[in-house]
Length: 321
Length: 275
Image (cartoon, rainbow over all chains, first blue to last red; front, side, top):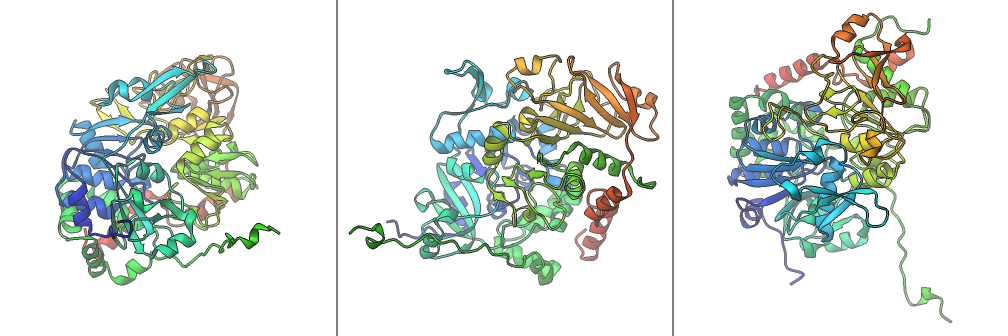
C-alpha cells in the first residue's frame, strides 16, 4: 500500500478531492503559491468554497472573480505590493463574499491548532481591537478572551480549523507524497497539516532516496498526502526558491491592467485559465506569446547550501568493548 | 554642505523612517516606504540593525531592494529562513522586537489604526486589505512606527474599525485591555510632519513639521484639536548621502516613481500584443 503511487494530473486531483461548499486552504502567499491548482479549481467551476489562508494574493482574487468563493477567512488580501485586490475588494463591498478577519499570527495560530489536533490555540494578540469585537460568519466561534488558568492574565483563544482539503506547491516530492520545501514558509506548514486531505503540486518528482538523504527538508510525510501532481512552473507568477523568481512584470500587469475592470478580467481569465487545458499548456502559451527568453530569465543562478554531515551509525560507533 | 537641496517628499519620509532606527535594534517591516527606510538605516547609522520579516526570514542580506516581504532574495544568505510563527511568536510575542513599521487608512489621536474597512464591517463601504501582520506588530513591538499619507479623512476622531490597537482611549487603557507593558505607537511619520505621543495622556502631538508645510495646513487635516510640541521643530532635511542611497535603492522607480513604472510596464505589454 505505502508504495502505491499518488501521482495524478491536477484535473484528476481537483476533480476527486475538491467539492462545492468545502473549506479549502490554498497556499497563496506568493512563495510556493498553488497557482496551477487554483486555476484548475476555476476551470472546473467549483462553487461556494470557504477559502482560508493568511495573506492571499492574486490566487484568491482570481478565484473570487471566477465565482468559486463564498466565504474567506484571512488576515489580508491584495495583489501584494503591485496593487489593490480589486476582485476581492468589490466582492466584499457588494456582499458577494463574506469575510472573517484575523491578524496574520491569529490566522496562522488557527491553522496550527487544527494541524496539532487542538480545539484552540492560545495567543496574546487580537486584544483591544475590532478583530476581537467584530465577528463575521464564524460568530462566537471566532475567538474568545479568557483569564489564564495559572496567572489570571487575559489570553486569546483562537478556534482551530481543519479544512476539508489543503493544497500546496512544493519544490519536490516522491510518488508516495513525501514533500520537501525550502525557503521562508509563511503559513504553509500549518495550512498544509491542518487539512483533512492534502493535495500537493511539485516542481520535481524525485525518488524516495533523495527525500531520505535530506529529511529536515520534509514538510510532511507521504502518509498524510492524497495526491501528488508534477507541475513545473506551478506557482507562476509567484516564485519557488531555487527554481524561478517572481514574474514581476506579469504580476504588475494583472494587478494594474486586468483585475480592476470586468471586461479586462474576463479577457485575462479567458486567455490564461479557461483558454488552456492545464499548466503545461499555460507555460506553452507563455512561451508562444512572450518568448522562451522571457521565461528562462526568471531562473536564478544556483546558490547552493553546503552539504551537512548527519553521520553514518553502526553498532561499532556505539563504542562498546 | 551636508544637507541635500533637492529631494522629494517620499524621500524625506523614508529618511524620517530610517532615523527612528537605532543601531543593533531588531526591526519588523511590511511593505512600502519603511522597507527603504530600514535599508537606508542599515547602510548608514545602524549597520548592526537586524531586519525580520513575517514570512519567517531573519537578518537577510538581499542583493537587490526587496519589492516586499515575500521577495525570494530575502532568503539566500539570511541568518534564518523559518516560518511566520517563528517570527511572530518566538521573537515578537516574546518581546524581542524593538520596532514594527505599520501603515493604515485611518488613525485617531491615540494612534489606533484602521487598515480593514470604512463603514460597517459586515457590509463595508470600502474594503482595504486588512491587518496582515500589522495588528501583531502594533501589539508586541516596543515601538510601533506608523507611516501614512496625511489627509483629513485619514486623521479621524474615531476609526471605523480598529485593526491595530494604539493607546485605545489614552492613559493606561491599552495595558488595561491586556496589551503588554512597554509597547505602543512611538511616532506617526506622514506627508506633513512627524507626530508623537504624550507620556501620560498618550495623546498624539505634532513633534516636527516638514520643510515648507504650514501649521495651518497640518491642523486643517486633523479631525480633533491637535496639540503641538512645546519644542516644535522643522523636520531635519535629508543629507546628500541619504538621498543618494535612497535613489540607488530604487533604480527602476518601483517605489518612488509609480506612474513612470506603470507606463513602462504598459508599453512593453502593448508591444507584445497583450494590452
